[in-house]
Each structure stands twice: as C-alpha cells, then as structure tokens.
Image (tube, rainbow, N blue to C red; front, side):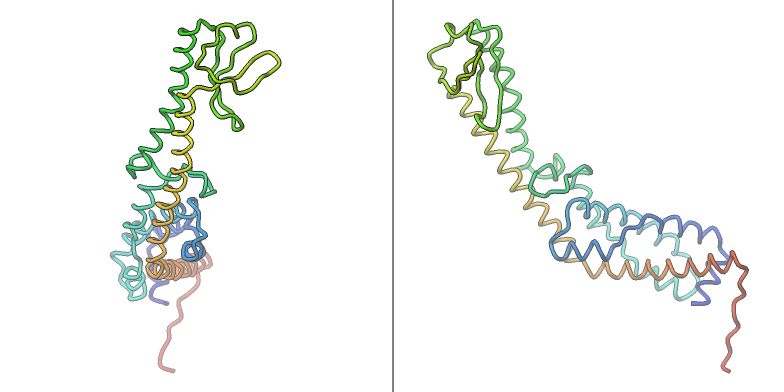
Length: 255
C-alpha cells in the first residue's frame, strides 16, 4: 500500500486524472443489487453505462503502473464494454422511470417494436387524411375527426350541418351544439392503433427485462470492478492527503 501511495504522490498528473475520472461514478454495487433483484428501471441501467464509460479510461491510466497493488487493480478492472454497449444501443436516454408505459427501447433496435410504432404513427397520422377527405366528400366544412379515451376516434359535426351527414355515419353521441359519429373505417384504425399500443408496451418490457437479466448475470464482473475502483479511490485519497499535508512515508524494517 505504501508503494502505491508513493507512486500516486510522486505522479501528480496521474493522480489528478484518476480522481477526475472517479468523480461521477455511480454506486455500482447498489445499482447491481437492484438489477439482480429485478427492480432496476431504465435510468438505473443507463447510470451503469455512464459509469462504465469511465472504466476503460481509468484502466488505461493504470497501464504503466509500477507497484504491485496498482497492477492488481489494473487487472481487476473489467471494462464491461459488452454490457455497456448493449444498454446504450437498446435503451433510450429519455426512457420513462415506469417500465409499463413503453418508450424505453430505441428505434432500430428491434424489428417488432419498429413495426408496432409504425402502426401507431400511421394510424394517428391518417386521421388528418380522413378529415380532409370527409370534408370534401360531405361538404361539411367544419367536420372534425377527434379522439378521446371514452369514445375513441369519432367524427364531430355541428348541428347546422347535420342534414349533410352521410348514411354510413353511425351516431355515437349527442351534444348541445353537435353530434358525434363513428364509421367502420375509424373503428378499424382505432383497433389497430390501440392493439399496437398495448402490444408495444408488452414487447418493450420483455426486451428491457432480457437486457436487465443479461446485466444481472454479470454481477460478479461488476462487483470485482467496483471493489478495484474502491481500493483505487482510497489510495488516491491517501496520496492527496499526504501531498497536501507533506506527510513522510514511514520506513518499515523487520523490527
């Protein structure tokens, strides 16, 4: 330990670079406990990648170390780039904390997720096309295609244009100044979009859980690296205090 501290005291640049990169490293063991028990969310996994990005840098700084303890720490640091890359490639940076809302997996990572998202977007985007087409077909200038959670997708027509409503419109709700209708086309779009929405939440959770279990399987690698970084942190603290206070290294003999 004394050799390690002396090396870090004498090489101020090395020590400052190590301290700079240790700064901001998350509590790896706490996060991995959540990962192993299946309670980690997307933010927890992303915090692992933020931390893991420092591993290769710190390991590189120790590459030319002379003393045995620093060499041992160098050997014990696993860069874990395989797990970091998996998480980084799969999980959105702005993923929600709740895992049952969707919006976790990045576009382009999974074909099924991309397909379901396309169904949702096209289903929502086509409403504007339907509205424009129905205005032209019926001559109802203020016709609106809308959505709410109670009635789903519907067409709203004010009372002044009710005489122009086509026969294929199915009356859904009567308001004070307007009527709401549905059509077979809108029912099909609603079914497709809502089915895609429910399915995508399920699929994204399955993908996330698989990634979380992959990370959990590597818990020993994370623990070994966390232990190495903790030892290095202590040695840097000893060296920093020794340097600032002009401490003298003791000479130890057999007596």
